[in-house]
Length: 370
Ligand SMILES: Cc1ncc(COP(=O)(O)O)c(C=O)c1O
Image 1 (cartoon, protein in one colour):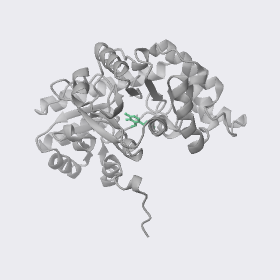
Image 2: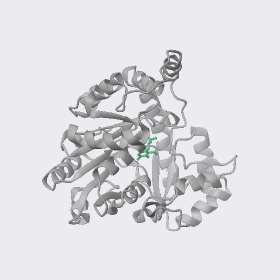
Image 3: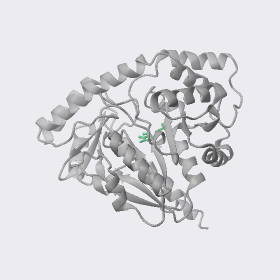
Image 4: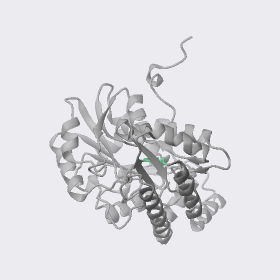
């Protein structure tokens, strides 16, 4: 019996997960895609209160109205995006927002542009929709910042959409305002949808974040609570777009997951509407770690830019696989850049979502093998 559906035949399991499995218990894991900080206590308290108050039943499919209103307010204030709470769907992390919106808007055989290198899920979600992922090359020389010219070069007659991620996993690159604007104009003129993954919006160092949806109506904005509030395990995110587009996304969301865990939605509302000091404190700590890692790598003669966002450093190496393997021997786990696309072939990703002390130790271990 051929038990495998055609749509999963070419799907790969995550390389980053494979790196975790290789890690010994004493290894310093620099492959992590999540903040190492605890979820702030006021969010945990809100979750406990929500359970005590019986928020254990289904919510509306789109999500709790109170949370959707808070998200709409946040989008107006932080992102200059004018939507109502009704135009927001609360999802199981940004992951589900990405999956549901692609399933709702992309046809088999469509082409979808993705940055290369990019977060691994993009390619697989596009493949699951029967569509083709077309790489848009980002280069070290451009500090991995996507330009409209890169998109023009990659575009095909079948291009229906592009996925853009800024700040970026794996490079930490943050797009410039003029690039966000020119890519938005290009998408509007060519009737292309932008899936804008803004999950690292708050983890940004002395720079402003710009949202495509404030310039282009064809945008689906994807965001969530995992990174900004260290809530990865609570699995909550959201997406928003024009009402006609949201109606289509709701069809996939509703029949797939019905609704997100209701108590978590109440806790997420508290996260959004309380003081944001926990976010700025965490980002300040990430910034110190970024400086440590970049300066240490550069001192060892390993080239990388000082990234403006997220918690990753993408450094150059002529023989990444060998170096990553040697690092495993020294109990340091990293991910070869190839996992994120062919443009990552000569790079290695370090996540600095690790304590300052562990990062220092990891850098000493790497120095031994350089
Ligand atoms: C770029 C990017 N988008 C989306 C996600 C998924 O986030 P969530 O936990 O909200 O599903 C991640 C997680 O690593 C990510 O790096």
